[in-house]
Amino acid sequence: MLTGFVTGAEAHAFAALPAADQRAAAVAQASRLFPMLPEPLAFHVTDWVNERWSKGCYAALFGPGDWSALGPTLTTPHGLVHFAGTETSTEFFGLLEGAVRSGRRAAAELLSA
Ligand SMILES: Cc1cc2nc3c(=O)[nH]c(=O)nc-3n(C[C@H](O)[C@H](O)[C@H](O)COP(=O)(O)OP(=O)(O)OC[C@H]3O[C@@H](n4cnc5c(N)ncnc54)[C@H](O)[C@@H]3O)c2cc1C
Image 1 (tube, rainbow, N blue to C red):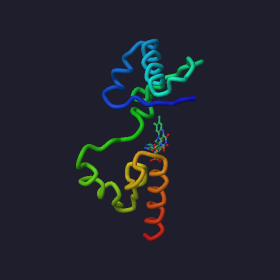
Image 2: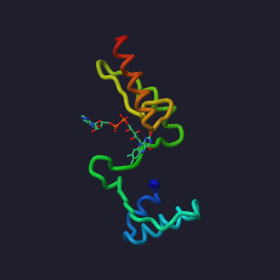
Image 3: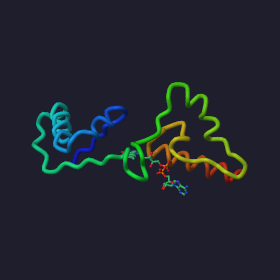
Image 4: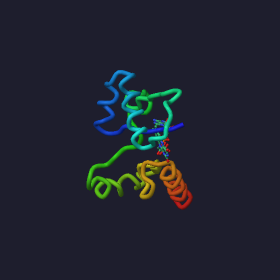
């Protein structure tokens, strides 16, 4: 099974394509990368932008300078509220590893509070 992502502006253009064109575009891309691939037996698209609880994929992206400006605020406790989540991680931002590391950081903050 192969999984791929269409991100940014291309995601909106891809989402607007008919299903057959989505499949043709994905198969063409996969074939360019792996010419030995056989024709797929099945093809599935999840539109994360329009998925009710996700509304996007697959992580928040900051623009240039945003992390430097906003990062300290994202990770600073406000009263009794401590923030965790992959978007607050200084490493592996946007990935599961970043989420785990931010959870450890927040847990350590609580233990020492
Ligand atoms: C399609 C897709 C593919 C991905 N693939 C990979 C991959 O291959 N490898 C990888 O490392 N990462 C991948 N990621 C990213 C990874 O899933 C995230 O980085 C990770 O799940 C973030 O964890 P988190 O704990 O920060 O946030 P989340 O997992 O988003 O957890 C936040 C939780 O808070 C809950 N919540 C929200 N609002 C409230 C509220 N008001 N009250 C109570 N609860 C609330 C939500 O329901 C959710 O359960 C992928 C993400 C997507 C969407």
